[in-house]
Length: 268
Image (tube, rainbow, N blue to C red; front, top):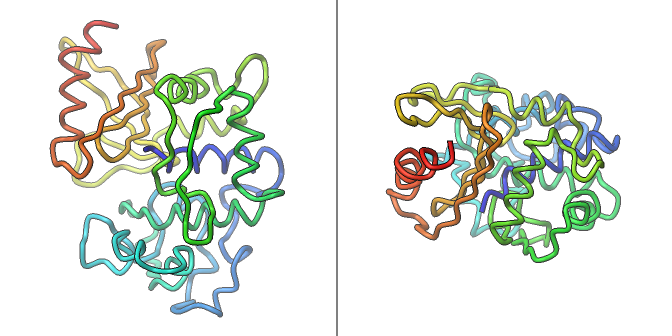
């Protein structure tokens, strides 16, 4: 569930600790693209492109025929290598297209950049300060935490994670995530085409829910099956929904109905 958003969080923490310079750092500083297929233009791709699902890589999970569709990645022996070998089209940059495989590359870059690797870094810098102990990663074939999704923890711990953003990155007086990173994450970055007033940020979604003829805007993490962590912009509320409607067309619309007809009218 919602593993992509955790990849964004850990990127911000890595930048705050000086292990990555900025989200504008070019991917060519991590990889020698001459060793991969279709190297043209990839040096100029930036971390920000992966965070906002608007990179030039040919990957679109909504298109089964896309070369970088996530379902084509999972059977391969090296998921980051799969991404690095994809065709690259500069014209795609800055155009939103849902690209799960790009978050695998983000995790690989984090794993290369932080001392000891991504898993102990996440434990030290994020989970331990929040006293989150009962969690479980899934892994890539290279045994790097799967930043595409699948992290598991209980609902209360997911709520802590959401509240951390509501607290501008602070927990018990300690700045866990740089405040500037939280501010950028809770800012609309890219409009999602084909959807009315929906946006994407740094691996967080954004839209407003209708509540009694009013709107309640949220930035949120969303996972397969209808799993959500919602951070409401103008209300002191974080809502966590866990569900198991995996692969079902109704999973997300069901959550919207629950929020608009029952949960939000009760709490707001």
